[in-house]
Length: 368
Figure 1 (spheres, helix red, strand yellow):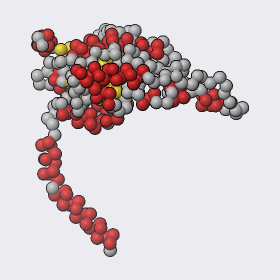
Figure 2 (cartoon, rainbow, N blue to C red):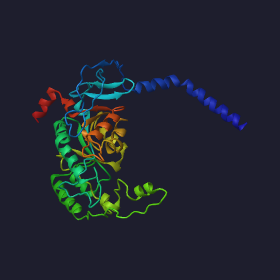
Figure 3 (cartoon, rainbow, N blue to C red):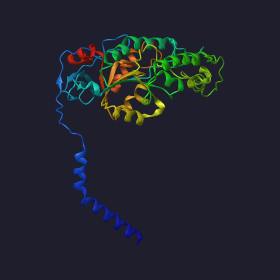
Figure 4 (cartoon, rainbow, N blue to C red):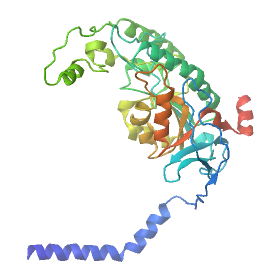
């Protein structure tokens, strides 16, 4: 009887809900943003040029047999920023390119993980076998040159026109960070910034950047010597064994290859994606131009990575303004090519030369 009564009650609730369905549906529809029909007409491009070919030292150009042109995708009212982009589709059997017209004031440039390692600020890769960022000092210096030559000029071109410029850093905000960088809560004064620079150099300078050396003897079993070998001598160990205890607790600076403006923001991964999302929406941001490191890890998987941002914003990955990690190679260009190509299955890819302010906005920027 109890089960029968529960059945009847559930059935009554379902019938009652159904009687209200039309009005509920109308309410939901009235709250939806306006939609348009997109004509997904693909036109074959004859003799296309290679993609991401402006900086071949850092990114191997993308070459694909078939390329198509698609209609305008993002079309903002009052658009003043042109962002041509592409994606790859196995089903279309080729690369699809499309123009986009976006409003600069509704766009954020977000730089993922510009770690200030092995630069003038004092945070150093531990010796003799420590690892950080791109995992060797030589590779870190290459990444800094990429920042200086490619990313920083791109950010500078757009700063003052886009809605905001932001950098994301690993971990939490330290007290010295609050003096150095603008956060979503506070903008430090010039005096606080200068004090922060002195404090940061002191904090980083007194750390002991020495860890253990590589092992000289390993214990191997007769049955699984390969397994035992890698268990005791892995290809990447960033723990305190080689980096020294406390290394990852130090306040990480933004790379000195970046010319930070006092109005730029720094966001910290431990603050979480929902807070970042709500802040960006509160600033009326709808589009994100994403640059930074590393294409295969932080660029996609951290708080400000595209896996998160693409759930709520129109995201454009700037394919030549990112580098993938590149083990067993002296160049990141092939690894970056591969990871950007993989991302293009579900993300739009642009490049620094394809993001252009319109004439009216560019002329207005020069008068500021």
